[in-house]
Image (spheres, helix red, strand yellow):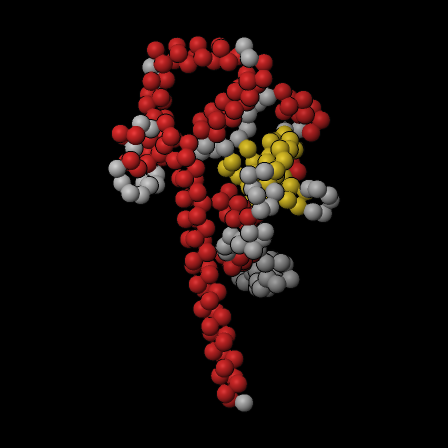
Length: 253
């Protein structure tokens, strides 16, 4: 009987070691796979346009990963430098006027440009708060990201009916890059203390990886506040009654 228990405990330890190894290796392997895939994708787009005499793959017996990414970063930085000058701005405005004359292309270009300008200009406060919203039915709550407030026609149209409204993004588990854009009343939201990163982890893991919530700290704070409340009248200690100096209690002369 003891031998079987020892074998079971050894198998349990091996299983725990294996799961610990998976927890350590799986995120590293997936991160490396996605990073290399992105690098190879950029290299496949940039390297064919690099002259052979400047391409290290022409001199080395193996391909150099990331050289196309480096060239792309340098080119984009140079384009941004020239676009910030007067001559560059003139060239860019000329090209935009040409694109605006093309019916289908101008719609795509305007939409993409507005998205990139909004994301890059307000990247610090694009989604800075997390809240709960009762969706898709009563009694079911979803995690939403509150977008930075910008006055527009939608808010003005809903304000007489719903009061102050905010734009929220409701992501879909586990792909948080897709979801629904909703304009809801601010009073219908329940704000949360968790960060956007913690909420994204919770959504990607389908609720398995949640943020650390110090419930004990909150209970201690509530207990401290409760201890500062005045005691009820029944629990207060009785105070001795004061003797009133009446005429009968005065000493006789």
